[in-house]
Image (tube, rainbow, N blue to C red):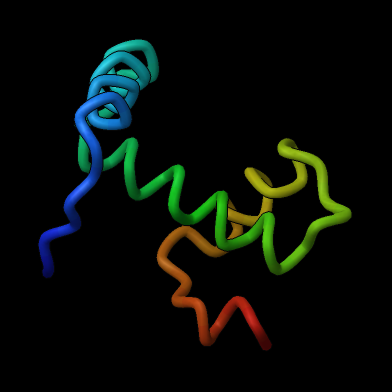
Length: 67
């Protein structure tokens, strides 16, 4: 586990989104990171398609997603 430094306004966005989505701030950040990685790997995919992929591979690593 590591520490990621982010700007104050992004942290505030995380706090707001985490409350709305009933996630911890860390869980919300992880969700956004995973969605972002998938979006870069599959730029043609829609958000619902990316979420479905996350649900199929809940704990997949980047290496596994590239296969």
